[in-house]
Image 1 (cartoon, rainbow, N blue to C red):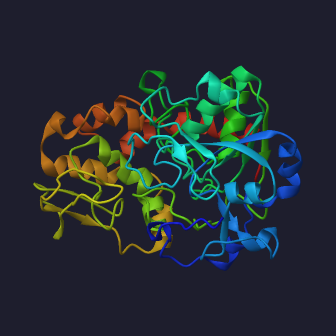
Image 2: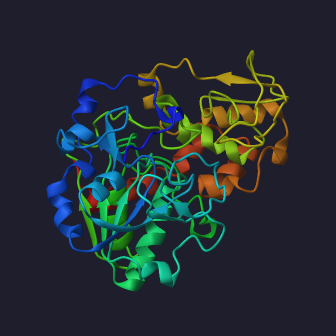
Length: 396
């Protein structure tokens, strides 16, 4: 029952010793095994639901990297796992952003995989909900509002609330830690890339987000148990052991994602279809920088923007990780690119507001505002959110 993770997802950066000491929720079997025993279990997970096999005893089967997947762990320990629900990018994490992924069976265990991204309602059918008694959630989020794994969790929580099914969240660290920044999502811009009135960088783990969504009435009230990470605080630097999705293959890309993903709402490429997604950005008519790249169709980036066209742009791939970690959400690259291209309103795509969450950012950029002036607009909202967030924190 070994699960061979694609080489694509092996991060090419060394894990600091301090990060190795963090124990994700999945490793605290004493906290959740008793909740699952004797029940039909469904799992909402993908390829990131792994932990060092050594944490579960020497006899535990591991993949070549020494890790074991949650599904394999539960199946091997005799739990009645009746189904796997998969989020965006599929259970194995290889599908394009937003790509429809059909349901199937897990080759290692034979357990049915029910895709929440099959092009239908993105929540289980009534028949599927009758196949389990408790839901275990385990996915590595990246702490950014427009990253969709938390939205899949919320949809499953809604379905479980309707069915009276308890939810257990096996928590994982937020790689952006305690950073809180960006405008709060306005309700009119809610979408598949934004579901809660929270900043772009919210400074919460998946478990804390689940608690907040229930506590604030943003989702239907359901029974949620969070199995906490150990040896973790929001100030802990945590290097992801497995890349969370095809276009975030490195820790640097994860750090730069809050800033560079805003370019997805513009005419610029963020390097999808190259070896450096979310570490570079550019446009065929870009006047800035000597760096050039040509997007190509590849697994995880089929028919990328500007496929086969040479783009000029900016290469951030040499940025030291400490500097990338400190970037957070920066508007300066966005404002500079807008002014450089001189395209006016045509610089933006309709999805920009769904990503940034408000209308005033586009309006202020068009009016010539600086990044500092735009940031001042959301200062008070972030301060209020920080106070609200404190009620739901599980970690210092």
